[in-house]
Length: 191
Image 1 (cartoon, rainbow, N blue to C red):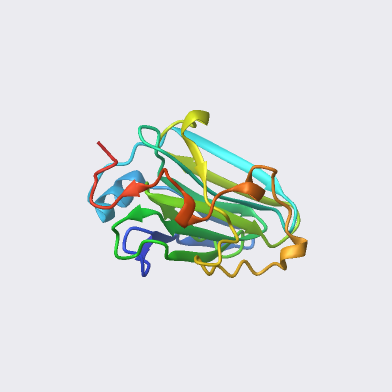
Image 2: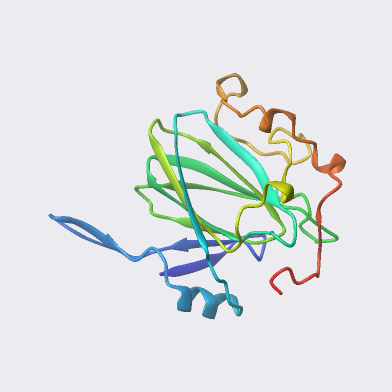
């Protein structure tokens, strides 16, 4: 299992080792001890989520406020997505910047999206199954979002705007500059 820091230090790409032969493959998708050794802090995942979507479905950009902020470890079981994490920590040197990576059933890559980041993905293939672990339970009262099409974020979603399929909630999220509930850089949200 290889852990790769992105241009935003706290966002990690994980490339597991795939063992395959004529019978199929085996892959270890999660090792808490190795992840914690790499990060230098403990993460206690407590909930697993899964969604199935058609091409063009865009989910995000979502985050939860403290005390229910979440770290997410995301991957694709079937199909392909463009996965995006946006730094929403005010005062961060990378505030408003994003990491985007293609996650697929073929490449088996995963992305660790820490607390203090908005997260979203767009589905690039029909019948895509997306799965993720979180380290805090979902809380409707703490649920927030950022506009996926905020020009200041400059995210290239790889699907034409008119082909996107969004929830009613995601169509009306505020721009990053209009969001009142953001994180502060330098605060430890893991305590």
